[in-house]
Length: 235
Length: 259
Image 1: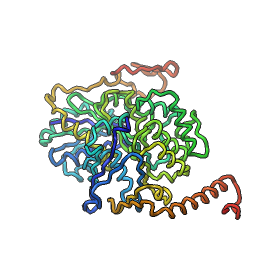
Image 2: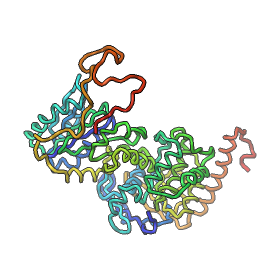
Image 3: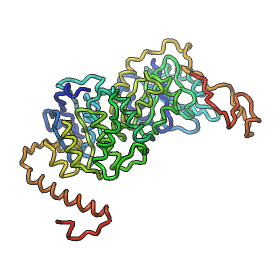
Image 4: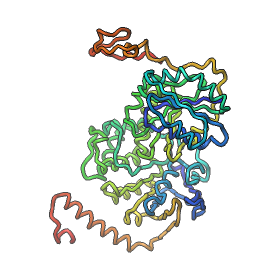
């Protein structure tokens, strides 16, 4: 079985990309789908209805959605195997852009929309830096020059990224993504799968329930208004 | 990209919305050709140029296939912006990139791997030939008007993308000097494909592709037989142009405008 992890900010076209994968590969491959979200998600029902594939969703609720995905990933692989799936697609909620949800032994696809601001690729850095491929959606709405400038911005974050420009609704430009999925190796040992990048440092005092404002009331990695320099120490 | 390497682009038929094959054997485009794509809204005009832009290989909804010099083009023509032989200028008249004009052009120049100095400045100068209100290099792309954005994108396609084939989706819609755009593009020996509803743009093209129901319905080659209609439309366009300029300048429309 192959594992595909799809990430990207909300409303960038992740589900449209998933639909294109199922439309094009669903006849020859059995595809299972897991959606991870915080409070509400409808994609699983929509895909089940449209394609009749096995789907599941998990709500992270109070937990960070990428944290939730780390917790459930192994069980999800077990579930997809029971369903005799050839491909498991995991779609992230993609909220804070601080983590990246890609694991080893998976094809990590970041989806980003060409109509997002030009600095978006820089803002979602870990999600782009650790991906294998980027699918840039809504290219029908921008001119050639804009597309190329957006592409250059992505390459500033990850020069090796395989970039695909697509209209995910129409399906144009998908052929290279489908080929990459077809060529990608299967999971060789689910017990050795790990996250590709380090998650954020330590435990957040907000997460453990402190509501006081001001850095004096918090511990761990604290930050003041002045001198709040760059603290990202992940990959 | 050396435009000499592209001798011809061939479009092989796909199918219409009912699944029937399109009404042509092949359409061949060569450097210097001008073609207009006409037909009602929703008839598949934009899909036609999108197929060309991505070099469809029987893998789009229209099922068309595009060949370069009679062969399936190499992947780098599609995926490497520095090698892509096609520039598409969409209907969209707003640029969403939050950069200054000069920064935007310099980033595009970098992505195309161009080292020639002052090309950004030349691009802005050329764009300013197409538009009334001048574009300044230090203004944000998002602050440009529809006409300014369109002018800059056309100039960018000529100077920076410098592709042998330029696809323009409704160039007339942004209030730019369309005759100047067409003349300039012809001067640079580009093959041009216009999606258009404008009689003048249509009549200035060598060939006219008529779309219907998602497919090519007819390919017309007037061969000079529409010369009178073209002269008339140019005359009408001049009147329209003068009236537009006078209205823009705050003048009242009186008999003088017609002479």
